[in-house]
Image (cartoon, rainbow, N blue to C red):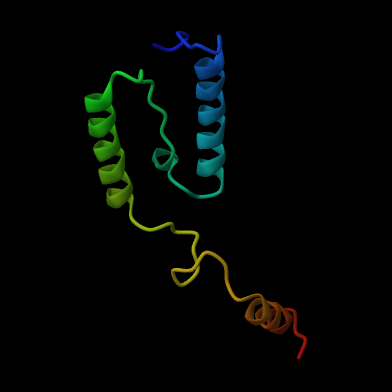
Length: 91
């Protein structure tokens, strides 16, 4: 189905963008398997369900995002500023 898109080259362009983004993920220390693309038609509900289960299992196998600090998306901004100041030798 690649290249067989109602929007002409939409899925081909999407595939290229996904591959580029997967390389970026690797560069920042995340596994590229965290981002996947599958080509399905609207009539492929069973295949979608199977693919979603496989992707979910892969993400669970990879575990939590290793870039998160203490399980949060972003550290507290005030605490971060204090920590940075201490590292720079400021009080």
